[in-house]
Amino acid sequence: ACVEQDRLGQAFEDAFDVLRQHSTGDLQYLPDCKDYVNVLNHCYHVTGSPSCYGMLPPEQPVYNWKTAINRPADLCLEGNIHQSLQNIPENQMVQFPVLQQKGGKGRKKLRLFEYLHESLCNPEMASCIQWIDKTKGIFQFVSKNKEKLAQLWGKRKGNRKTMTYQKMARALRNYGRTGEITKIRRKLTYQFNEAILQRLSPSYFYSQYVQPGQGYLSLNSWNANCNYTYANCCERSYHTC
DNA sequence: TCCAGTGGGAAGTCAA
DNA sequence: ATTGACTTCCCACTGG
Image (cartoon, rainbow, N blue to C red; front, top):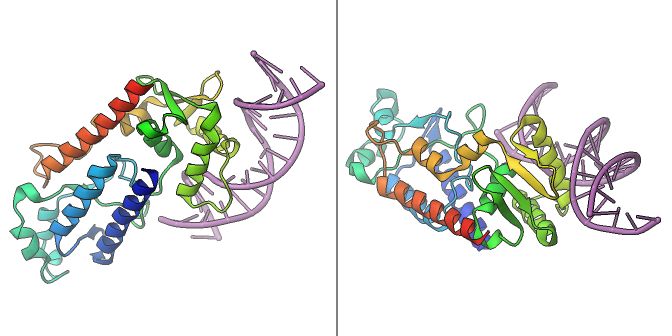
């Protein structure tokens, strides 16, 4: 499942690379948005985690494709974009934040705390990491398999050397300074900061990216499906703990 | 005493 | 060139 998730993650990021290749300035377009929607539908449905592909934090802008494309300057970007967008039914268009790093360039890198939260929501990782108190964001590494989780993290990041729990814990201790994750005085136990926990939760994701009546283009069924899949995944994980 | 786990300084890496 | 977010190494400490 992890390999499949990584494969799809790569496919998803490749889709963004294509998107970027067709971009100019701050706004980024794909010539055929229906294809893009298809990619999103497929990848997101299978993997189910909003943090997996570096979604933007809520403070980042969400672009209204249809409004943006109506600007005169946009009309000459790509010959067929305007027509392509106009032909797509409202309910098949996706509201999606542009993946940007500070400065408006590049993809957002997966953070360790995002990876840990993702693992906590993955029932298959329950042998490595588990919720102690989900509502408070308290979690614990499983002593027997903590190294396995660390190795997976290292592979995910593409590190040269093997990641170990000790090294991963060093990174976790750095979170203590910024407050994203704090150490609980209990073996292998840590706690997410409330704000981070809220930001990573599916309901918060949903409220940030799906705002009915705001006039943004949205693919409601897609978003709802994502939310359902993610929530369902978390729920199953919760019950196994 | 042993050992797994913890804590932190310091330097290195890498992408943005 | 700078910065953020780790990564790597190393060593001292703690507690069961």
